[in-house]
Length: 189
Image 1: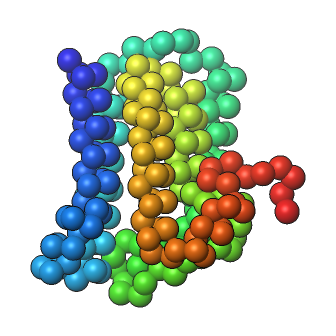
Image 2: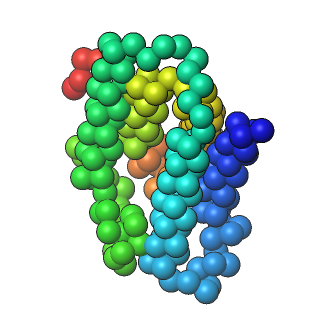
């Protein structure tokens, strides 16, 4: 039952995470809230929801699906660390204060830094962190959490791409044709 609750929690989190930024929900809320306040509320919900889910998953009894070998744990730690570096590199390209709703300036269409190599570096980083954590703590709860994240990511990417195409049009279409979504091309240009 506790794993059913974990899956339901992830499903609800991802549904709300995507649903709250649809035009059907966002436009009426922007009548009540400023864009800055909406971003702040949305970022707070996203952060708190994620922390609650991660704590719940960590609180479940550790039922390992394979023994946590030292080399696998080390590999997982390396993957997760690399994922965190990618996430930090992504945030260097965004106006973080605006992204979080702490400032009123708008995020422009940025194509520099890590965004030269991948369109969705935050998702790339999340994939690496999730895989790393799964190797570091090979429990049923981490397997379910990683599985839910991996199932949602194509949906999240699709929704984000639609929004970016509506907002930036041909400029984003051209960028999308040149830059891969998650994994950079090799060799890098």
